[in-house]
Image 1 (cartoon, rainbow, N blue to C red):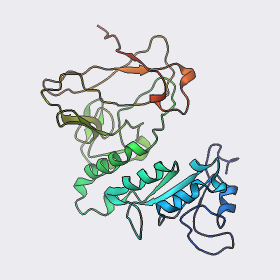
Image 2: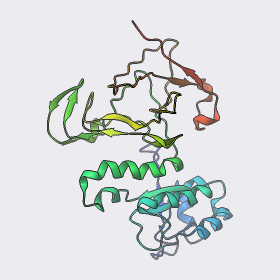
Image 3: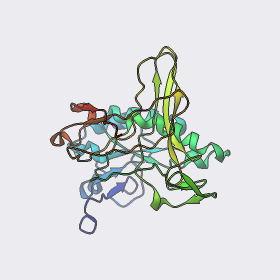
Image 4: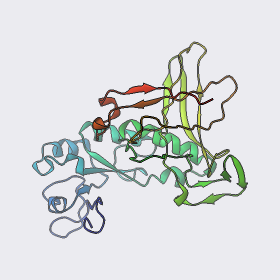
Length: 283
């Protein structure tokens, strides 16, 4: 696999043990270590407890490879599991506490288990917002030009340059563009701000990015909405174009935070010093 697809990963699912019997272990141990040693990682079964994670923390077979142990989480919460459904974040809290990776199984629960399909986007945003603090942000690496209209690869209508070209539902994942950071954050004074995909309007494709929230009158400082976290090399002069529709009484400005290219590693952005830039407007 590595020869045919450089960068690919081969993971072993915790099912068959060394002797060839189907016997879920819910952890990495001597019964399945032989498979772990032969590939890039293991995806454990879902019926683990925190005691399993504590034991693996001191297991010699996982030494130096804790990130290669993917703790399985069944979103449907079948059997005796930690978390699941809209409490999947509880499982991730425990997993991150012990510094393991996670394998989120069947997130389609958000759609499949709810009768009211019109609430899918709302439930989808709610589910992933609960997990966002526990998930690593994989920053896309891209040369310029970098372009995204936030299209998710489906929509109620198809738009081109802000005009509706077709009014019908469509689905084509090959048109999906790099997605922004979807999140929900609390503001002081019981305010809040969140971002989500909006299928009611778009620049190109099937949806746009909607920033919505409640900003208390007492909140006088600007509210910052994170849109992207990227690894994109910039020239000394770079043209940035932003297309938006502001609500009445709302002023929009763009802020870029940059750092030296030598510091752009696997580390989180919080680990390096960022320089804040406000692009000059062209007349």
